[in-house]
Length: 486
Image (tube, rainbow, N blue to C red):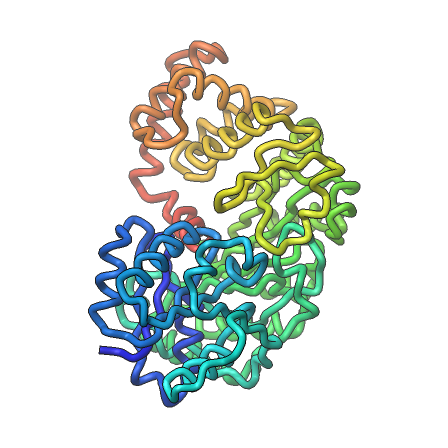
């Protein structure tokens, strides 16, 4: 039994909720009276409700994000109908903005807007003592990280053995990219390094070998970034794998010299290029030196063993198909191990909405609120690009068809080459999901021989090489990198 239940839906089992652990760590004297429940998206609502209600809680705190908003909405409605006396508290990015428009907020008793470690604990103390705050929507200033209890001791042995372990050294972002909720922050707040190092040291001693950092701009403060990298480098053991999100145009010699020391397969750098269109970048408040970013990515690939995961966004206001294609080709030429192609999303509260009228932006009304069309990209073009992104994931980013992918993309425009394949695949299959790997291998072989006219023997040999590489696990580092990047 528990007076307080903290619950959320994770995208999949191997993900675990860092947010719930942060809330639990800061409950203080209430922590022994609280429990955490983590569900996967494939769990049906009645089973999730059953697990929560079996603990007979007085208060349920539900973490709501763009990836689980639908499931959380259903669960909230069920809980309030089954237990009208239950005090339902919502938190998370999805319910921190535009709250009056959301049905899930109407089902809640209280909604905490923004970072909730302190405010949730204060709310629970008041509720348990019989005091209810006068307002349903609770907004509090972002807490000072130095005042927060750290959550790392709440990772279980099972988490360490089989799930992604999240970490953070800072919160906030100094930049103003309008597609991102971090653009609403007023600066960066840092956790004291001595406390972090002590907590991470304990995790390492327990066998943790993978850390995914949630910092939006890990290398903003070069001295702190160097200290963290050196901390892990000094404790390196085979199997250690680290994921950091880096600002691509800010990579001084000090960081290069440290990253060079990490062995192959031990460090992944996620670099958010997003666009090479200078006008589009300026329009959305993105300050980026594209030439410097290009130089840094190229140098990281040439001089280090870091796995480079680079991001591009389809559909930014004012960027058309030709511009995106040129940007993709420019990034492809830098040879990152992975290019993540994402469709622009209009997250609740994100300032990107101010461009809707001028640029004809139309988004899906359902999470994750992806762009459906703009004044420069009609709906049918967006559908082609969505398929391009999906097939790119299956074929290129998976690492299973690396040789085949390179052959398809060979030529002056890798983007146009792969878009042609994408159109052909969809015409043949009518689907972008649930394509068995063996079937996809056969389709790729048919495309190379029937459309691109490569000799059958060359195509067969290439397919066999790809299959052998995958069977030998040569894509293991890539799969581990993608696991932490998702």
